[in-house]
Image (cartoon, rainbow, N blue to C red; front, side, top):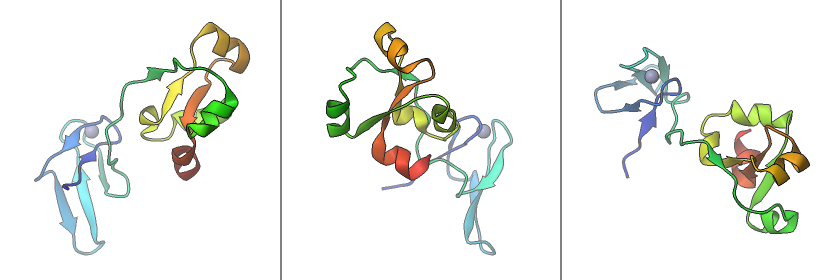
Length: 118
Ligand SMILES: [Zn+2]
């Protein structure tokens, strides 16, 4: 499978010719043709940032846990939303019941991804 790389600034998908192997650092060097961002393969994302999705499930904690999900509330959710790729692994709580219970800026998040990345 061929790896795909995405610009952390603008989400541009890098194609061949837009990155070069750097023999001194043993990294791939990237330069984004859209926003001018430069960096190496430690900084690029291996998946595109998705759309912000709204949680439309329930809030049964036992069921969430069984599904590998947890709820992250403010202020911890600040760190979540600053983490690249979070939109692919979390859902915003935006219904009346959820807002009353967890406040705004609360998310349902995949536990494994959260523990590894945030
Ligand atoms: Zn870019």
